[in-house]
Amino acid sequence: MAGPSAPGESRLALGAGGLCYVIWGFVPLVFQAIGRMGVSPWELISHRILWSLPTAGLLVLLAGQGAQLRRAFRTPRTLAWLVLSSLLIAVNWTIYIWAVNTGRVLEASLGYYITPLINMAAGAVVFRERMDRLGLAAMALAAAGVAVQALALGRLPLVSVALALSFGGYGVVRKRVAAEAQTGFLIECLVVGIPAAAYLGWLSRLGGGHFGAGLGVSAWLVACGPITAVPLVLFAWAARRIPLSAMGFLQFVSPSISFVIGLAEGEAFTPLRAASFACIWAGAAVFLWGAWTRARSVRLAIAEVAPAE
Image 1: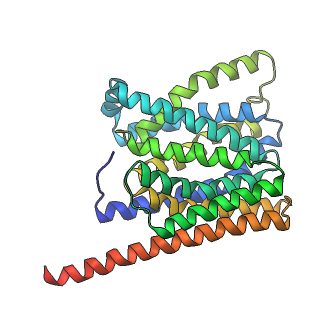
Image 2: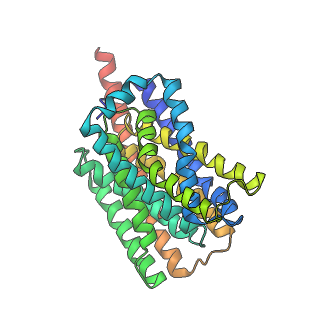
């Protein structure tokens, strides 16, 4: 795990984290556009993985991390962590693409509202980050939101829970991996790229593939690579340099954008479902208030110590 970052690097990490979440907020529109061209979720996820490989390789070259890449392949522990993270992110991508292309953008949005609170809990349990009473209150409100959402849907919101757990788990694993973002992402792409290439080859032999069927659909499928690689590398780079709880703070940007998209597309928003989101938003507000008060206390403590130095 990376050590504490310098103030300048921490600010850059916050900016990188914020940018990745803005990109992720608008990604549903891209996947929906590709889905309307007849591309199935399985084909889309396979192209997303495959076209991420050249982007990831280029980023490793630009960062001069070839030696680190070779070292990671020679270190079983690092490789094992990256295999686990690749499986978690592949599960997350698959569920998300299926959800946004089947009219479940709001349910996906709920999942990513829960994720910061999963991150906060993981930060307390795995990384010994302190959780105060405000943090516990935020967790309780999130749990209430999930329960009300289950009542609204008539079932457990499995999409929301699966997205939160898979991406929360991914953040925990990547924070523990002794590899930079670019190197780690390239290895992740290589791990899941093998089955993705095999599936696309099988689909092509059946005549069911869409790549090459037209300039528009082919261009969109290729674009999945940088659209996927850039924000994920930003996320992994930032996650190793700032507390996991701070990443959770930024996480609220993405589901807020997706929530607006879901409403604009006319997804059902019943009073009970509104109550569910109200619980989640209340939890988010408590979380943000706690983060702000802790940051303010640190600034005041530094200001008091500075004159004495």
